[in-house]
Length: 180
Image 1 (cartoon, rainbow, N blue to C red):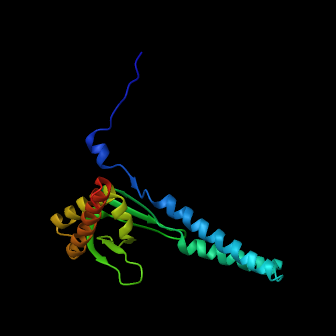
Image 2: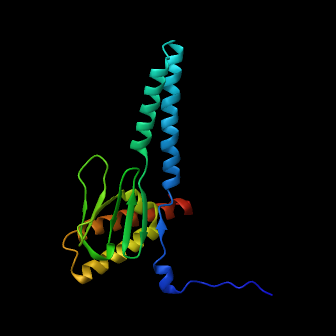
Image 3: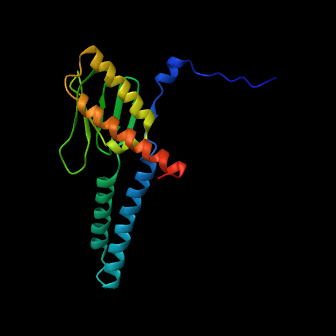
């Protein structure tokens, strides 16, 4: 008897949950940097012959603090919803009911999304650039919001994001083809 394979219906594919594919690497890097800091501090203290249990605990707490600061947000997108989870927080927005999309002002650039329910989520643009399927779902839902009339401001930010993604994809195509 043969193996039976079923394929999801097109509407099921549209509601699939898409995760950030770069998250695991960034999480490993955060752990590595925390461990490296701890090892360096212990080494310096050992060489200086000043290592005590209290100082080791202090260095461990500093390494854990660095790990928490560097820990990446886990972003997932499905039709109508974007979720961003950090170590101590979780935010979710309805992407098919967006009210505003804007760039945050600060050292690290973020795309800030707000929905009609007052929910807010921040996404690193690098996550969307590295994950075109996530961007496609977000862009489709943002267009739905604009069509419904709920998206009051943010079409410029979305166009800028689309231009960045198109530029990065073109750069990747040129690099892969050997032209760049």
